[in-house]
Length: 485
Ligand code: GLU
Image (cartoon, rainbow, N blue to C red):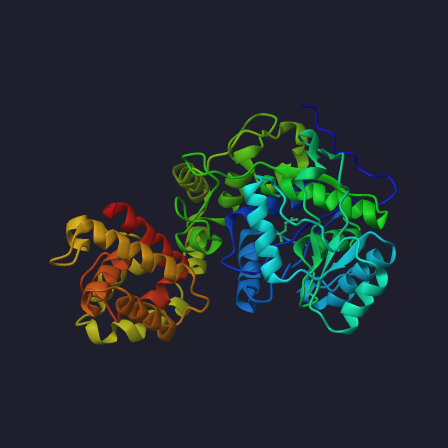
């Protein structure tokens, strides 16, 4: 498939990533960020970081901060964003609500969108009918052609409503993907999408398209999973009378079993890789090499070299496998090249520093007879020396299968935690004891302690988990699940 990625001659290349701050910073964000950075730099363009926080319930300031920190750690630099500013701000969608409302109002005025007053019951009913008729779309467009005076009456009566786009009912929506060629989708498969929710907040589709247009984005480089949203976006550009950007959908990173990369099979948090001592330049090299190769096929290259030689033709669309053994091998190459003094610097930047020792000191003080005791007693805070066995993990008088289920449910609860402090961890663990019939505090706590530290005796469990960090605890709980499986 020939690559078709035009570079405008009358305006600068502008690209963006648009993460939603709803969880831990994801390795996929660094991957997509890298290709945006490289492409922008190759063409002397700008790379924008936009925060898509329209989901007010799930978005948190802590997650946003973690995204900034992790991307900075990786060395993926952005030119414009909420923290660095720029001429197209604000760069946080929650600060742009008026813009989206004005744009939705414009589409209504021009007959491209409409108010929909469907209640939750009506929508449930439509979904049930669609299921029966085996239709892919479910909304039956019952409010699409409501007479204007009826709409007015309902609005004045304060009836809750959303705004929907009038999708074409027949025909196909077609767009060109820069790497994949023409993609077509039957319009009959696309619902009249919601643009503004009943709380007046925009949906992802509306905010994303309006911002990409107003921020003069020329190329949307994002993961393959967004291909199914693109026809909706194309229809929105059409409704506004705007020229869409060039869409480039990057291959998804995959687990060894080829499924989409997920925390169930692979640690996906950038914080995890930082914590276990992967060097940022090795991580970027690895992420770049997964889908792209240098003209001489060398395994090891810097972002600078990638920019110098970048060419979309050298990108491979096959499902790239996120292979941690390969990442470690590459990381080893980088470590070996460091001067001794540089290695010392890196170790300091990692965990061998005052800040980390100050977190450990209060936990260990009571447990030392000599200073040298500190080393074996804290080994699991630095590296992973656990040797887990099912025998040790399963509490006395409990079954392995049941223990697996309890550990799995606990792991999921831990993963869903929004704050990471001793009180929250204690509340989660105690809550889990209460929710698990027949399990005592001792059973749940000991299994957790063993899973995250590999030991029976450690400093206080909650404090230990705080210092280990959520990303490490999560990965270790997942590894313990594999042992019990
Ligand atoms: N907010 C979307 C995300 O979380 C952005 C997708 C896109 O790049 O359009 O990844």
